[in-house]
Image 1 (spheres, rainbow, N blue to C red):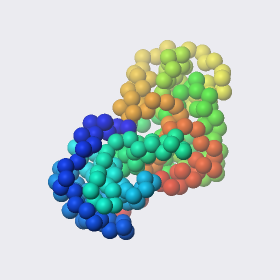
Image 2 (cartoon, helix red, strand yellow):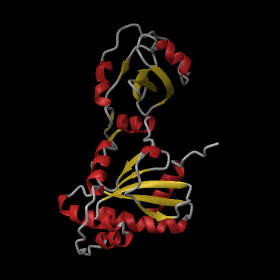
Image 3 (cartoon, rainbow, N blue to C red):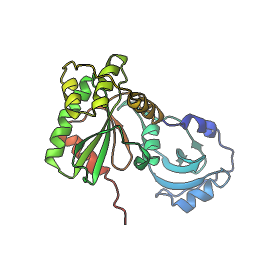
Image 4 (cartoon, rainbow, N blue to C red):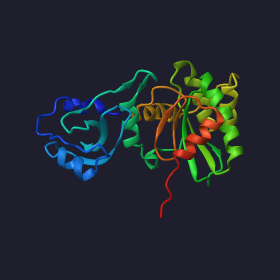
Length: 247
């Protein structure tokens, strides 16, 4: 979770919070009044999975932080909320939702395009040529562009394993989708010698985005989703996270 730990000073909130919050969903105006003693701007209020609490998105230090305000208006806390039944970090999920990645700022000069360049819904995929789940996902990507010609995938080859560094370098030297697919299928590639920083640049990019594993998707609207997805789930995920049209 990108820099959320810098904002955990809200664990203890002074007693200027007041009570009698209505049971229905708060308005942003009401939440702003309740949290008037805290430096920040209330951006959103919604119900949350945590019984008895509202989820408040507050802009602080350039990021929107998920905070949990109880329905009495007396208690506010910040930190990791874990759904034990699903083994899921709800705070991380809410933080990612509130702080989408600006996909227009992601450099794609080292990416390999799968699909039509004019496709309106483009998903960025970080993949390692020596990653079994990346191989499974790539087959799904091939099915996806056939199922919907308005989808495309910008594939950023990122060797998180040292053993796949040279393979990645060969693929990027040649900017070859064929070689990527050969590597994902388990075929050894003949080494191509070239002078390129593309591999290191891709690794640095992944690190700056907090990507620690492959495959990882950055959806058209900037939401980051790690892991393999079967075709129907992938298509639904993209549909629910489409890029907004620019008027």
